[in-house]
Amino acid sequence: QVQLQESGPGLVRSSQTLSLTCTVSGGSISSGGYYWSWIRQHPGRDLEWIGYIYHNGNTYYDPSLKSRATISVDTSKNQFSLNVRSVTVADTAVYYCARAPLGPAVWYFDLWGRGTLVTVSS
Amino acid sequence: QSALTQPPSVSGSPGQSVTISCTGASSDIGSYNRVSWYQQSPGTAPKLMIYEVSNRPSGVPDRFSGSKSGDTASLTISGLQAEDEADYFCSSYTSSSTVVVFGGGTKVTVL
Image (cartoon, each protein chain N blue to C red):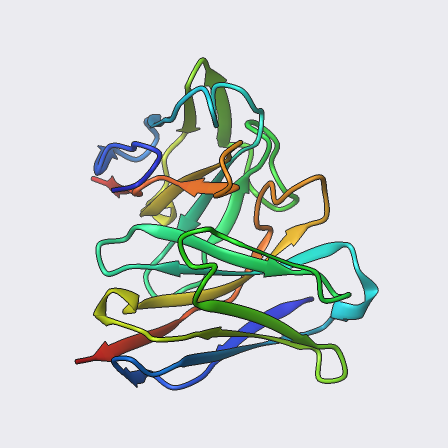
């Protein structure tokens, strides 16, 4: 079955760039049919959707992070990635990659990775 | 502060039913049947339990059911089992540019 796995540094210094990768196994991003998303969960449990990418490279971001976040896809590696620039301690969170079935918009997430904790140090 | 409001915790004895509420607004739950619910156990990936208000994905027990009235959605767990102890989050599509909003989560404790 399809699985998602996040990877990347667990510690990032303030003002630097956070970079994470999600590897998709058991299925192909190129086959279409899904939006590939990033979601984060802050220490207080609050979940925040960051944005998504489609296999053709089309992206959409939450306005609160749009100016700092970039999501990209590498179909040859079956991976998609997240970069968040100029991080602060407020970006400390568990970051999840997730899959959303294709539709007029993102309705729900039918598959999630286990998440990776990223701590921003001041 | 989360866009959708959930109670921090609910509890019940094995075999009982518990209901978790998720209150939003006319821009999300009130206008769209795009509510979903997720189960999150410590150290594991969140799992989709309900989508589009009341649909269960394959493999989710029929003890889990969803409903909606006005701006409030609900998840009911009937015949509570020890394995149901987890955090549960609601989510909804929203007409705002945010697209997706989440609740703050509810911890379900099986007594």
